[in-house]
Length: 268
Image (cartoon, rainbow, N blue to C red; front, top):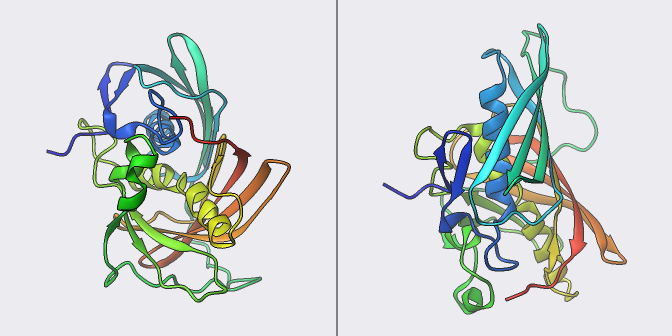
């Protein structure tokens, strides 16, 4: 059995080596932290007929690779919505705070698309699977989640922004299956890396930007294990930026991710 990102013992979640991040040894990747917040929110949401529509995650301290205490509170539960707040603490200190909004689906007739129509992203079937970190760059970053996630790069014209399909080959937890919401939350954090690739392609100053927050919007539940991340826009000034990522599955677009970005050179 593939090792999980975390092992649960009550309210404590101990990260495995697979959850580590690329920026400095001894700290976690943002993706597993977002996935953990989504899992806690989903477990605290009291109405099984509601569907996740939004997740906001603020990682306001680097999350250490140590047992994490996760608490969640359903702040509001009504007939058609629920709002859950999640707090992640390390050694008693708050390191991450998240908020998840769940809404009730209805039989309303879907409105036709408005604004710019988003085309289906090519793949993932038929595309080769590769590691996220190319072999020539493996020694440049510490081991962790970024080395184990699988990637299928979508074909792009020279003027098109980068896009890729991602799959996490490991579960978040051994004790429970990884839900589509948790998978989307975990993988959507990789939008920061996709935005960084656009800077590198433009021969700018590398991909050394962290995203201290992630906001995920879902208009439907994603299907399958492969999720596509397509850069819509990204911009930076004075070391501060913003990225907008469109999310796809094999059926088409299903949501968006917005992230603030902060210049952060890698520390080995």
